[in-house]
Length: 75
Image 1: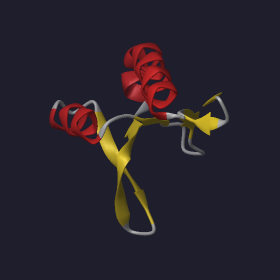
Image 2: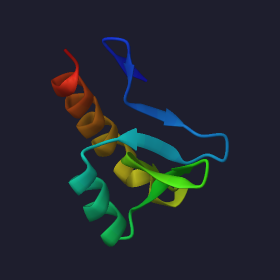
Image 3: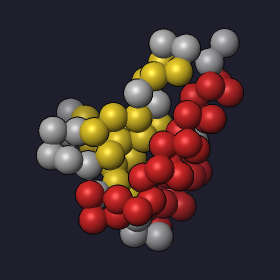
Image 4: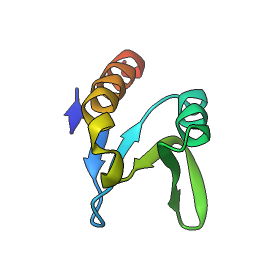
């Protein structure tokens, strides 16, 4: 999913939702057990998290949150 040309969410090949959110929010979601940091090339990405299909009830709200975040930071 994109806003003004910037990706803010997508579903990964293994079925997890991936969202872009502020680093602090990613930490909160991870601490609550809702998400895990997205790992790329062996390193966690600061502003990206994976949300399991098991937490699908949270997806709509997190997609909305990611949309607002990326829209706000996009010039």
